Image (cartoon, rainbow, N blue to C red; front, side, top):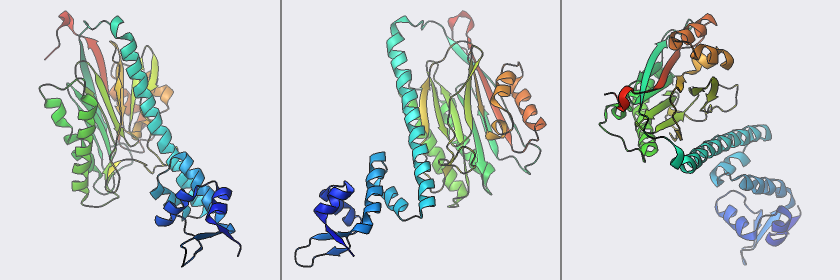
Length: 339
């Protein structure tokens, strides 16, 4: 077996000697031999492949703990893990990009916006078992400030989705919400929802729920999202998808993120500019898996959009529970917010 000194191995693998010593300490990349007298490390030529993989994964920004797990897998399984990791990175980057764009827009146009228009939220909500599932594990909520859809899964999916939504209801009942800190308030509430779901699940990792929620302060609209339920905006005849599914792969039903045991309940959050005439849709995947987005756009423009959307999902076979919340922002007559 041909051995390389740590210096030669570092040059060949493009990892610094300092990094190699760290990876040895972390049991990520062990040398083949360590001189008992000098402590000098020696590596096998055959280890270069793993070393280069480690270097590439570090350049991707993958945490060391995840790199250790990937390096222990067969190539096909490692490829799936890398694909899943990068999907998470793209989702998180897109959320930050949207937030940055919103803040730039707000700060750039602040002096030109008309803040005298008072808007209020009007809503309709409905949940349906569908035609196939034996029970409805979805939960919906719509109030003067809070809109939410949760899609439970596992043997206690219905209690899980109910617990998640219940953990957010105090936001709707609060006398006043901080306009500047609404994202933090909503994110904290989602973490509390995660704790409530864990209590319901009693440690069972196969029990959990998605959660997509909008919170209106009277001045700002905040979104929190985790899982594969969705939020859409219908504005000026265009349908805009506001969320990204947290799935391992686009066609997979396995979730990268959810409120469940063993998962870190960190939601995607963003602030959304609100305009008069905006119509928002929150829905479980029982709608989006059965009805194409172009058809959702057509039905969302209807007067009784909630009923129309659910009827369409059931007409397509109703393979899953389907839940919808539709909300409109309208100008308040007289310029005063409704109670």
